[in-house]
Length: 330
Image (tube, rainbow, N blue to C red; front, top):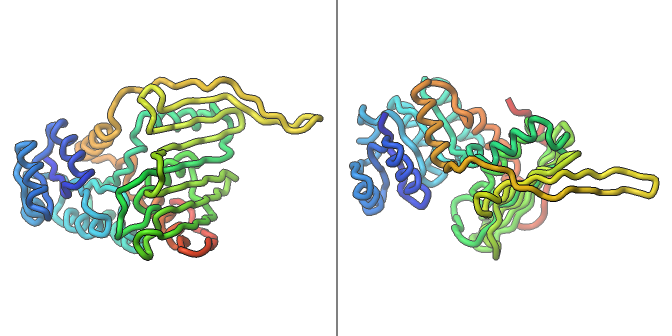
């Protein structure tokens, strides 16, 4: 099967390169003819207008990496032309648009996958396996941070832009949807567009998660921490590959003299040296061939979008507000 990559921006070029390396890149599309031309030349494929790519029966799937506000419309058009679809996060600009797109997906017979890249990262897959085996006991809380300087958006806030990966990983760790969300943020650069945000999620099981996102941070941090009753796991994606995931056995107990915390030495966990993006695109291609539902299909996309919507509705430039969320994950 041949794939068209729609969007040749900062991330789209990585998708085009990965598809070319996997031998499936058939065309590139971008409203910027120069950007499309550079990728077409680099990989020896045609640069096509979107309409022509959708009409081309030799292209069985599209990968959408355009600005978030355009995702839903391009996905609908691709589905209507019988294409399997992979779309980068976030799925849509708001929940109503996402749910309308989900209805469109369900009426089609096409494979549909959302690009929650870190769900395919060997470090997160290993972390999740440890959690599900009970290796650190019952999960107590989760923290996730995605901080850096730059890539400031003007059409979407920092939480919508940066946190979908962390929301997806947190929901997988918790195994359920939150029933309560709090969020606060501030807009410093573009009026009305939040530049730094914090969200707190409470789950029915008692698990609590705190997520932070900012594109104004003086340092880069991409970290997921899961603390359980008998241990903790840390996925630190800015560390070198052998140090991206570590575990520490630890516990806190109450004694007659008061609470006592004890812990062993941290130890790095061995990981398969495999590109998360390659694994993700390979999974999409395998689903297109087998017609199986992807790990991060439309239902997963909606679960994440619901949390993004709840948090986004609370982000203000003045004070935090509280939303009681009653909807559970399907």
